Length: 275
Picture 1: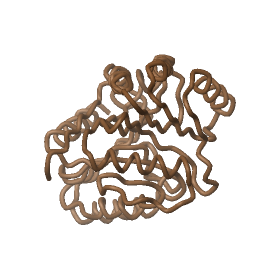
Picture 2 (picture 1 turned 120 degrees about the vertical axis):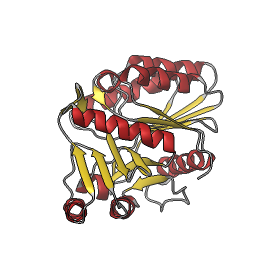
Picture 3 (picture 1 turned 90 degrees about the vertical axis):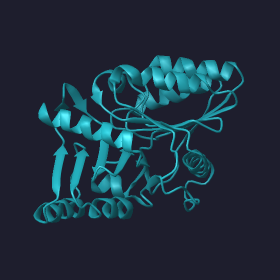
């Protein structure tokens, strides 16, 4: 397996500070993939980075439900203090990825938006990694999506799952590999192929459990997590739904570190007991 140097953050109280610390550590560059952001402490930290000479580039979704004017205002605000902002331009793919890379690492992959809601009230997942292959893959993806969004994917670490290019095949293969258990946190498990596979696994004796309630453990369901056989987890922006698997730029990280897998399994079981 090798050393991954991944850190999992589950507590809502720790999320904002982890991101602020990551941004605050940047000395040369920040690349950030953003869907929504209304938290001014994040914006202030990005402004502070620009002020100390960091080159800040932000890829932002061109559209999010109910956010047409907010995205325009957010873009203007970010540009006003010197960040470079570009709306993702591919007509074929909606943009929903959420990640950050500072300098040559660390990097962050997450299911949350940079919003007050996701910092305080949601069930979400955040992974900070110093794995060189993941960092290089995210930087290569960012450069492609920034400059040539219609181009094929560059060569990227298998620890990253990039949608829509790889999403359906990789996630179906992962779920299909389950021998003992599948645990999913996702409030939009609607894809017919996925649902058929999960039914087949159930019939073959695999333990399949899904948490998809609108409110889970006192938190609003937002984050996405898949855990197979307590040996592989996937955390990121994907839903197991046709739009997410087939039509959106999504990013997830694959985890096989035993301590993190145990933490995720225990977290799931605790939520399941309190449903």
